Image 1: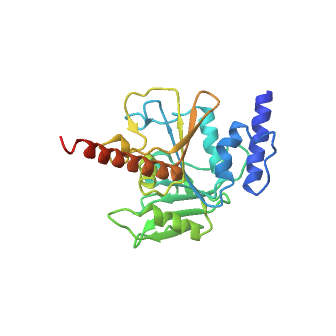
Image 2: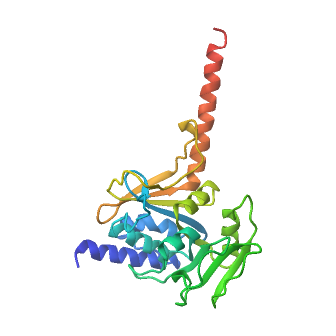
Image 3: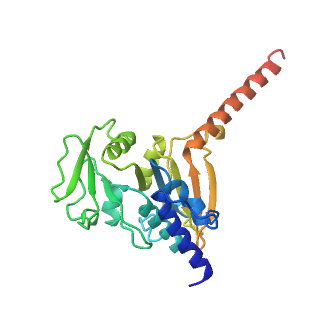
Length: 279
């Protein structure tokens, strides 16, 4: 194993230990893997959302093909996120399209609880996400929807507003069941709704060095008329093995930056109005 591989292996073990309260050795604290993942590993309560996309912001082709947009480094990073968090959540569309397992396979670590957001009860009982492998399995459905008939699968009923279950209600319901560190893995619609609802603490966007040219976009938020209203999260970037680049976006610090920009723009507008009012 190359020295860089040994360093990454040691850094990953340090991150996993930090999740349980251990101190990261000083020699490893500046390793990129530690810098990228320690904010996730050491948080007592956190919601992380992730997207894997191309340079032109596509997560899949027009036919829905997405395996794999990201290279091995991006896929490995996703598995590290799974291993660090209590639960991983996907929307019903992702389960129906991919029949995903959501387990940890590419790195050392335990698999998290698996959660599917399925308001109308569309996920079949034989979906891979419900496989009995020792991890807790939950399905979130609208009030009045049928309970899961799969043995061991927990059904959580939540109210529906404007045809959707509010992301904040989902996060609160999971916290009540002991899941305070949650990964919103997909799909893009689900991630977008959680970001729009300000229910995400950190957003990890893994950009692959390819141009798809058309297809399904990643984030889709409400339109803004002026760039001053664009979201500007405090962001760090980390190259990943194989050419992908991870952008780690602190969505909580973004809110403070955006508010400051808006206030500054308002002050400049008022100043211009004062200067030219008499002309």
